[in-house]
Each structure stands twice: as C-alpha cells, then as structure tokens.
Length: 309
Image (cartoon, rainbow, N blue to C red; front, side, top):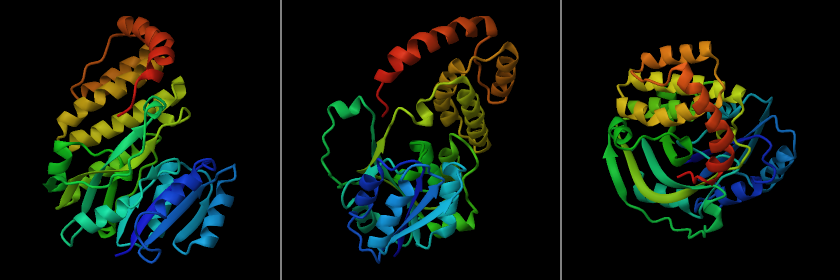
C-alpha cells in the first residue's frame, strides 16, 4: 500500500530539512511512500532545497506553482498524489521516527477509511521544557462511523489524519480558498462521510507554532478575514447539527472579533450572522472598551504566554 504525504511549502527554507528528514524516517521504504511537495511560490531558497531532496530520493516529488495559499497547495498535492492512502505535513512541522509506519502497520486494515492520531503543539512556552521522547506506541481510543468519532472529539486538522484516497475522490473533497479553517471544513466534510474511522493515542506529530503564523497575527484586516472563515465553518457545522462544536468555536471567533476593531455597522452585521447560529455577542457600547483592553493588554502581554494545546 502506497502512502502519499502531501507537504505544502511557502518560504520554509529554514524548516524544510527537519521536516523532510523526519518524513524519510517513518519506517517505510521509498517504494512504500511518496512525499508530494508543492512549493507555493516561495521567494526564499525552499525550491532549491526541495530539488536537492528530489535528486537524492526517488520517493520525493516536487511541484511548483504561483503563490495562492496553503489550500491551493494542498489541492495540487491531492491532484498529483498516487497513493492508496494520504496524509499531510506542514513544512515547519515534523513527525517522530517510525510514527506513520507504526500507525499504518498497527491500526490500518481493509475496513478503515480514516485513522486520526495524536499530536503535540510546540510553541515557545512548550519548548522551554520540551524533550522529545520519540514514543510511537498507542491504543485505539474510539472507532466507528466518522460522525461518531467527530462528535466525541472534533477533528480539525488534516496533518494528524491518514485517509483512504478513494474516499476523498468519491466525495470530491478539496480545500476551500480560505485563510483559516480550510482544514477544519475539509475534516468536517470527510468525517461526516466515512463509515469506519479509528482514533488512536499514538502521539507522533509535532505542530510547531511560529510567531509569524496566520493564527497568531492580530492586525484588523487579517482578523476580519478570519471572522468570515470561522463563520463559514460554523455554518457548515450547523448544517450537520454539530451544535456542541459550534459552541467550542465561539471562543476563537470572539477573540478575532475583539482584535478586528469593528465599526458599529460591522459589529451589527456580525451579530446578525451570529443570530443565525443562535449565538449572542456584544452590543457596540460594550464591545468598544473591551476590544480596546483586549488589543492593548491581552494580545501583547498575555496571549504570548498562553500555551496552545
């Protein structure tokens, strides 16, 4: 069984060797996997690094395109993938040795459509005390229909998921052109469609948070885009009656709203959209001072010290 690992890349020259070296060390032979690298218009030396790995390793395939965003790079990867199963890895992240090989050997069978495994988020707070243990052992936490797995513990990210590629093609799943939540929307559509999924405890993926990532940027323009993306995701959740997950998404949505410096009209429009989701936010006279405190105190002095789990 061939595993396709799709890696979207944009200006990741600094992290690429760590990422690719880890993917080559997954306990799989080069005839058992392919690493599909999509350079999304990088302006640094990322493409040169990729070409070097492509020359040395037959399983590394490199594609280049104009910059369109991670969603477009992932879609290109899906279009080019030839494996029976697919997973994803971001270019600034890595996996522990033999992680994917262990999960595939231990948990995959002919009935499985999706395997979700565990991950650790490495931000600057976590890294102060973090010591890698490279433990891949795990057990089955839950199994059954994808909807059952999702409702028990919502799955938001494609990089800790191994997917039968035929399911992706049958459901015509692709990533939407969103700045945020494109992977969450993809995972929602996937998990609602699959008949057999397994959630396992093997903690094999390391998600690295850098200060420049979109999820940490707090300029108002970016936040307005994020709000639209969150609202889209939440409307999709409502379509599938995932009310509990909608409630979970309120906190990150409100956080972006406080950072967006919304005008009275913009806040009114946001509240109208939230009404369709049975969610209440704040009236403008209350929003203004709270937004000011959030932007001037919480974001610069408190947010950087909150660990992301």
